[in-house]
Image (cartoon, rainbow, N blue to C red; front, side, top):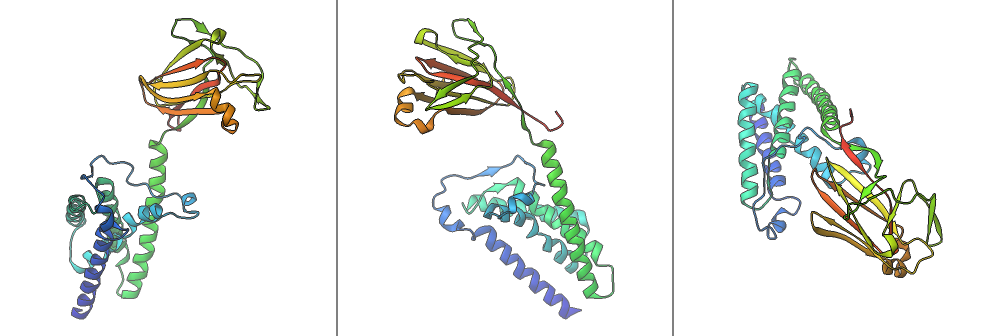
Length: 312
């Protein structure tokens, strides 16, 4: 037993050193620290149960592997430590979480990483899975049977966590709702416009079908329309100079008074492959867009998709 314990302690120490190497020195952390000018602390938890979806693994990226590693790499601690020392779950997981918080803080203070509460929670969940696998697996007199049962238990618990994370992600993640067209717009003069409703327009020799209303400036002057988001939305519209055209005019967009987009008919003349153009932007509640159309420029199929939970 003493020999087995010595081997077990050696394995635990070596594995701990390996994990510490990856936490502080792997992935070019040393070189990257030279370019870091401030500490990074993330205290707000996200969906820390989330793991990369199977579709994301075709092929896997480095971030996918890191996502799995944050949990998988810490499962062995939940097996090795209670195997070495008789310790209850609450005490084990509390001390382990505190140790991870200390390591995360050192990472941030040394510029070799960041303090991320999500990483700490994922690491601790990995250790909790290992502890559960150990308790479920070590029920036999044979060491071999114990190890096999523990491995099987660990795989089952990890798959259960993977499924739980996907379910939570689906519940808390908003998705795009159906497109809602803007069929009537009020410009800055207070006039309400229902726009024009042709079936299609021609741009660069292509016939472009219109789903909804076409808006433009009256008499080649300029018109400004306002959209104010009442929730989390994705606002969009298409734009371009319909033919025949002299490529006059332009379209610009401001967000809360700051210009975020500007395009002109002259650009359409010099780079026709960019037209018809599509403008799309995610908006938060209260964000205000002003769309100004001048000359022969037109915008159409303006509208938004509300971000909503799947049950809505």
